[in-house]
Amino acid sequence: NAGVTQTPKFRVLKTGQSMTLLCAQDMNHEYMYWYRQDPGMGLRLIHYSVGEGTTAKGEVPDGYNVSRLKKQNFLLGLESAAPSQTSVYFCASSYTNRVRSYGYTFGSGTRLTVV
Amino acid sequence: TQLLEQSPQFLSIQEGENLTVYCNSSSVFSSLQWYRQEPGEGPVLLVTVVTGGEVKKLKRLTFQFGDARKDSSLHITAAQPGDTGLYLCAAVNAGGTSYGKLTFGQGTILTVHP
Image (cartoon, rainbow over all chains, first blue to last red):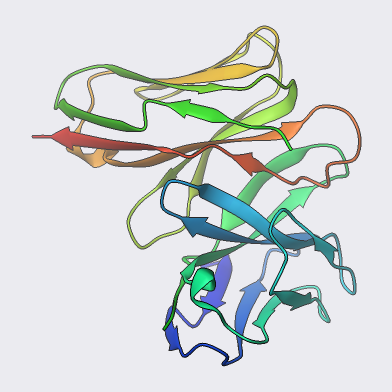
Protein backbone atom coordinates (compact mmCIF):
# COMPACT_ATOMS: atom_id res chain seq x y z
CA ASN A 1 0.00 0.00 0.00
CA ALA A 2 1.16 3.53 -0.75
CA GLY A 3 2.13 5.58 2.26
CA VAL A 4 4.87 6.45 4.70
CA THR A 5 7.18 3.76 6.04
CA GLN A 6 9.28 4.23 9.17
CA THR A 7 12.10 2.00 10.39
CA PRO A 8 12.81 0.75 12.96
CA LYS A 9 9.54 0.41 14.91
CA PHE A 10 11.25 0.03 18.28
CA ARG A 11 14.72 0.80 19.59
CA VAL A 12 16.49 0.99 22.93
CA LEU A 13 19.63 3.11 23.11
CA LYS A 14 22.13 3.78 25.84
CA THR A 15 22.86 7.40 26.71
CA GLY A 16 25.46 8.77 24.32
CA GLN A 17 24.80 6.32 21.50
CA SER A 18 23.81 7.50 18.05
CA MET A 19 21.19 6.28 15.61
CA THR A 20 19.30 7.20 12.46
CA LEU A 21 15.56 6.90 11.99
CA LEU A 22 14.50 6.23 8.43
CA CYS A 23 11.39 7.54 6.70
CA ALA A 24 10.33 6.73 3.13
CA GLN A 25 7.24 7.88 1.20
CA ASP A 26 6.04 6.77 -2.23
CA MET A 27 3.44 9.49 -2.88
CA ASN A 28 5.82 11.95 -4.54
CA HIS A 29 5.16 14.52 -1.81
CA GLU A 30 7.46 17.52 -1.68
CA TYR A 31 7.00 18.24 2.02
CA MET A 32 8.13 15.95 4.83
CA TYR A 33 8.16 16.38 8.62
CA TRP A 34 9.49 14.77 11.77
CA TYR A 35 7.44 15.06 14.98
CA ARG A 36 7.83 13.64 18.44
CA GLN A 37 4.88 12.65 20.59
CA ASP A 38 5.06 12.73 24.37
CA PRO A 39 2.26 12.17 26.91
CA GLY A 40 0.37 15.37 27.67
CA MET A 41 2.37 17.39 25.15
CA GLY A 42 0.86 16.35 21.84
CA LEU A 43 2.94 16.28 18.67
CA ARG A 44 5.83 18.71 18.39
CA LEU A 45 7.69 19.51 15.17
CA ILE A 46 11.41 18.67 15.19
CA HIS A 47 12.53 19.40 11.61
CA TYR A 48 10.91 19.61 8.23
CA SER A 49 11.80 19.68 4.54
CA VAL A 50 10.11 21.45 1.64
CA GLY A 51 11.93 19.48 -1.03
CA GLU A 52 14.93 17.38 -1.95
CA GLY A 53 18.13 18.87 -0.54
CA THR A 54 16.35 21.24 1.87
CA THR A 55 15.83 21.07 5.64
CA ALA A 56 14.64 23.52 8.28
CA LYS A 57 14.25 23.62 12.06
CA GLY A 58 10.93 23.16 13.79
CA GLU A 59 9.84 23.79 17.36
CA VAL A 60 12.21 21.37 19.15
CA PRO A 61 15.29 20.80 16.93
CA ASP A 62 18.05 20.60 19.56
CA GLY A 63 19.87 17.26 19.66
CA TYR A 64 18.60 16.17 16.23
CA ASN A 65 19.84 16.46 12.66
CA VAL A 66 18.11 15.62 9.41
CA SER A 67 18.90 15.00 5.76
CA ARG A 68 16.82 14.85 2.58
CA LEU A 69 19.19 13.60 -0.09
CA LYS A 70 16.38 11.99 -2.09
CA LYS A 71 12.82 13.25 -2.44
CA GLN A 72 11.31 10.06 -1.09
CA ASN A 73 13.52 9.77 2.02
CA PHE A 74 13.83 11.91 5.14
CA LEU A 75 16.33 10.81 7.78
CA LEU A 76 16.38 11.86 11.45
CA GLY A 77 19.64 11.47 13.34
CA LEU A 78 20.48 11.49 17.02
CA GLU A 79 24.21 12.05 17.45
CA SER A 80 24.39 11.52 21.22
CA ALA A 81 21.16 10.20 22.66
CA ALA A 82 19.85 11.53 25.99
CA PRO A 83 17.05 10.17 28.21
CA SER A 84 15.02 13.31 27.37
CA GLN A 85 14.82 12.00 23.80
CA THR A 86 12.79 8.99 24.90
CA SER A 87 9.62 9.43 22.84
CA VAL A 88 7.58 8.18 19.93
CA TYR A 89 8.78 9.68 16.66
CA PHE A 90 6.49 10.18 13.69
CA CYS A 91 7.38 11.02 10.14
CA ALA A 92 4.77 12.59 7.89
CA SER A 93 4.55 13.75 4.31
CA SER A 94 2.17 16.13 2.65
CA TYR A 95 0.97 17.55 -0.62
CA THR A 96 0.90 21.20 0.27
CA ASN A 97 2.07 24.61 -0.76
CA ARG A 98 3.69 27.53 0.98
CA VAL A 99 0.58 28.80 2.75
CA ARG A 100 -1.83 25.94 3.38
CA SER A 101 -1.84 22.29 4.30
CA TYR A 102 -3.79 19.55 2.53
CA GLY A 103 -3.25 17.11 5.35
CA TYR A 104 -0.49 14.79 6.45
CA THR A 105 0.06 11.10 5.85
CA PHE A 106 1.83 9.70 8.89
CA GLY A 107 4.02 6.67 9.34
CA SER A 108 3.28 4.22 12.14
CA GLY A 109 6.00 5.62 14.38
CA THR A 110 9.28 4.64 16.02
CA ARG A 111 9.21 4.07 19.77
CA LEU A 112 12.63 5.06 21.14
CA THR A 113 13.79 4.51 24.69
CA VAL A 114 17.09 5.99 25.91
CA VAL A 115 18.43 4.45 29.12
CA THR B 1 3.86 29.80 18.10
CA GLN B 2 0.11 29.45 18.35
CA LEU B 3 -1.40 27.42 21.17
CA LEU B 4 -4.22 25.01 20.46
CA GLU B 5 -6.28 23.99 23.45
CA GLN B 6 -8.39 20.86 23.26
CA SER B 7 -11.09 19.92 25.72
CA PRO B 8 -11.87 17.69 27.35
CA GLN B 9 -8.57 15.86 27.71
CA PHE B 10 -10.32 12.59 28.60
CA LEU B 11 -13.82 11.38 27.76
CA SER B 12 -15.33 8.06 28.87
CA ILE B 13 -18.87 7.35 27.69
CA GLN B 14 -21.30 4.52 27.02
CA GLU B 15 -22.15 3.23 23.57
CA GLY B 16 -24.97 5.26 22.02
CA GLU B 17 -24.17 8.54 23.75
CA ASN B 18 -23.33 11.76 21.93
CA LEU B 19 -20.19 13.80 22.57
CA THR B 20 -18.43 16.97 21.50
CA VAL B 21 -14.70 17.76 21.50
CA TYR B 22 -13.53 21.37 21.30
CA CYS B 23 -10.40 22.97 19.87
CA ASN B 24 -9.72 26.65 20.66
CA SER B 25 -7.05 29.26 20.10
CA SER B 26 -6.55 33.01 20.22
CA SER B 27 -4.99 32.86 16.75
CA VAL B 28 -6.72 32.86 13.38
CA PHE B 29 -6.16 29.73 11.30
CA SER B 30 -5.93 29.41 7.55
CA SER B 31 -7.12 25.82 7.91
CA LEU B 32 -7.78 23.27 10.61
CA GLN B 33 -7.63 19.51 10.54
CA TRP B 34 -8.87 16.69 12.74
CA TYR B 35 -7.01 13.43 13.10
CA ARG B 36 -7.76 10.14 14.84
CA GLN B 37 -4.98 7.98 16.28
CA GLU B 38 -5.18 4.40 17.49
CA PRO B 39 -2.60 2.83 19.84
CA GLY B 40 0.62 1.91 18.08
CA GLU B 41 -0.29 3.76 14.90
CA GLY B 42 0.18 7.21 13.44
CA PRO B 43 -2.63 9.78 13.27
CA VAL B 44 -5.03 9.47 10.36
CA LEU B 45 -6.60 12.54 8.76
CA LEU B 46 -10.38 12.76 9.19
CA VAL B 47 -11.18 16.17 7.72
CA THR B 48 -9.82 19.58 6.73
CA VAL B 49 -11.90 22.73 7.21
CA VAL B 50 -10.91 25.99 5.56
CA THR B 51 -13.83 28.44 5.48
CA GLY B 52 -15.19 30.20 8.58
CA GLY B 53 -18.55 28.67 9.55
CA GLU B 54 -17.90 25.56 7.49
CA VAL B 55 -19.60 22.33 8.56
CA LYS B 56 -18.52 18.93 7.29
CA LYS B 57 -20.06 15.55 8.01
CA LEU B 58 -18.39 12.16 7.92
CA LYS B 59 -21.01 9.52 8.75
CA ARG B 60 -21.73 10.06 12.48
CA LEU B 61 -19.02 12.72 12.85
CA THR B 62 -19.77 16.42 12.36
CA PHE B 63 -16.97 18.96 12.18
CA GLN B 64 -17.52 22.71 12.50
CA PHE B 65 -15.11 25.59 11.93
CA GLY B 66 -15.84 28.77 13.86
CA ASP B 67 -16.96 31.88 12.01
CA ALA B 68 -13.78 33.72 13.05
CA ARG B 69 -11.60 30.69 12.21
CA LYS B 70 -10.24 30.55 15.78
CA ASP B 71 -12.03 27.44 17.00
CA SER B 72 -13.49 24.14 15.89
CA SER B 73 -15.58 21.31 17.25
CA LEU B 74 -16.02 17.62 16.56
CA HIS B 75 -19.40 16.09 17.41
CA ILE B 76 -19.98 12.33 17.40
CA THR B 77 -23.55 11.04 17.35
CA ALA B 78 -24.40 7.65 18.87
CA ALA B 79 -20.81 6.75 19.72
CA GLN B 80 -19.64 3.18 19.15
CA PRO B 81 -16.71 1.25 20.70
CA GLY B 82 -14.93 1.54 17.36
CA ASP B 83 -14.77 5.31 17.87
CA THR B 84 -12.35 4.79 20.76
CA GLY B 85 -9.04 6.54 20.18
CA LEU B 86 -7.07 9.76 20.47
CA TYR B 87 -8.56 12.71 18.59
CA LEU B 88 -6.22 15.52 17.61
CA CYS B 89 -6.90 18.91 16.14
CA ALA B 90 -4.15 20.61 14.15
CA ALA B 91 -3.95 24.00 12.48
CA VAL B 92 -1.93 26.20 10.21
CA ASN B 93 -1.52 29.89 11.06
CA ALA B 94 -3.20 32.38 8.80
CA GLY B 95 -0.92 34.74 6.91
CA GLY B 96 2.69 34.36 5.95
CA THR B 97 4.51 31.30 4.66
CA SER B 98 3.72 28.28 6.77
CA TYR B 99 5.06 25.50 4.52
CA GLY B 100 2.18 23.41 5.76
CA LYS B 101 3.57 23.18 9.28
CA LEU B 102 0.88 21.99 11.65
CA THR B 103 0.54 22.86 15.32
CA PHE B 104 -1.26 20.12 17.20
CA GLY B 105 -3.53 20.24 20.20
CA GLN B 106 -2.79 17.96 23.14
CA GLY B 107 -5.52 15.55 22.10
CA THR B 108 -8.68 14.06 23.56
CA ILE B 109 -8.62 10.42 24.61
CA LEU B 110 -12.07 8.97 23.93
CA THR B 111 -13.18 5.64 25.38
CA VAL B 112 -16.56 4.24 24.37
CA HIS B 113 -17.75 1.35 26.54
CA PRO B 114 -20.06 -1.34 25.10
